[in-house]
Length: 329
Image 1 (cartoon, rainbow, N blue to C red):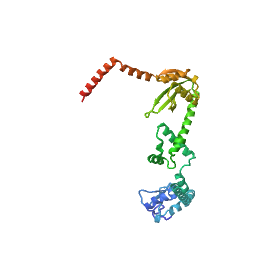
Image 2: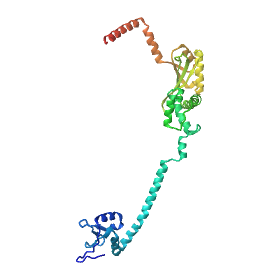
Image 3: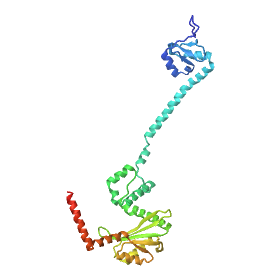
Image 4: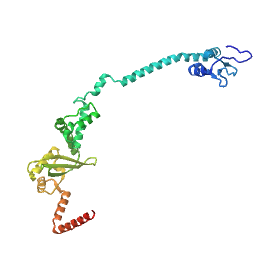
């Protein structure tokens, strides 16, 4: 350490930029503080003497280390160990960054096998394909969509956008396999629910489609063990044979047997007042027939309009309506 004549201060030269940048880099600056009012000067924090000032030539901290080694050996040892650990920490950091970059690259660039797997169609026997097909079948059944929807290119493109690995089943598979399978599953579910309930009420109607094809529908109504009203259409069956009371009663018995419903559990059946339906209920002697209120109301209105007095009233009403209709134009 060089002494300056005429002064009781120990002095070392240091430039301010070097001091500030070195303090950030070197562990030795944990024990020294630059003097803001005097450029290139620093004070030792350990000496606790204001006259001890250190001055470093050529922007070097070597004199700082020398002072620390001479006057504060224990702190010098600690700082020296930190100085040795820094290159090791830097190397470890670089190694970690290298591994991280490698991991990022490996995640960003999937393996060829994975890329092929992500585009390989699900096998028809796989759980994934069966699950999606089951959902598709349910949608077609509940929304009463045509089987041809699975052949529509727009629909296929939509499904492909959801899962590129799923192959839409053919129209034949949907109509001959998927829908019958779903029907049987739902039928067994309804049979189980019917076994758990007590009494059952029925509604039935013989009707014709727009193309005049004859059908018979039979619906069951009951209260579940959890006190919820359940309604299931047991069958809507094509019935080309004559809709006589005997034939209708025989068909109703057949449907009830399919669902393990005995006549003693049926408390009532609601039908219209057609002679054939009344006759069918007579054939099912143990079941009480309840006339359909809607059908009774419909017949009542029709019969009322045929009465002479009502006919004149309707004529007057039509005249009034016509007058107001023309006056509003």
